[in-house]
Amino acid sequence: MKIAIIGAGNVGKALGMKLSQKGHQILYGVRDITNSKHDSLRNTPHFTLTTPHDAVQKVDIVLLAVPWKSSQQAIESLGSLADKILVDCTNPIKEDFSGLDVAHTTSGAEIIASWAKDAKVVKCFNQTGFTNMLNPLYGTQPSTMFAAGDDPDSVKIVASLARDVGFDAVELKGLILARQLEQLAWLWIEIALKQGFKGEFSFCLLKR
Image (cartoon, rainbow, N blue to C red; front, side, top):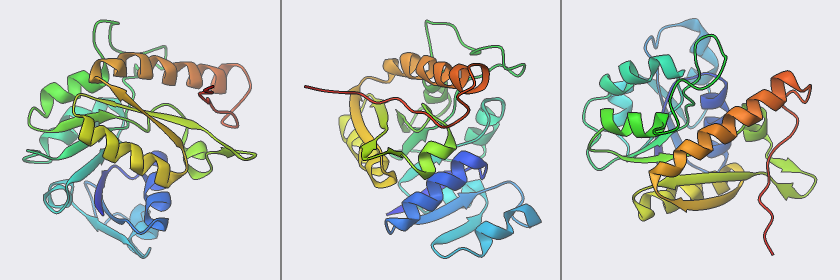
């Protein structure tokens, strides 16, 4: 499967690495493809480095993995997203890192959906840090990753990608649940940064 990843930070790189190991072809969309900081991506098999707009035109699935403050500009640079699955991996964190930048009556994902009106938006890959994307296993137990969206078929496809990364993926009905998933992400960040756990812990949904 061809997948565009918009953004080449820690999350984007981790997801690209794990998905490429499962045979997916990764197109990284970055603003400056000549920047030497992208050399490691340029020289990796299964990776193609191109502009965000060009990356999106060649795929059916787009992962948005940029800082929240850059999200709207990134979406506007992509061109048409009609009928494409847009996976929102972002969290709407305030610039001073004091909390989330949205009220409880909406979510970053719902705002992104309003910017990308023709896309099928799914919230996923936002609930933990990149180290857990590189290795979701704790012993033999995989970490849980939720995927939430309004289109069930799109959610199913994104959940399958989460399983390819190594997560125990759980499909949720309704993009409105992104509100809770972003709060869950903020809880993970608080525990990691302020409670001394760093990035070496994860959440797991246990079922009977």
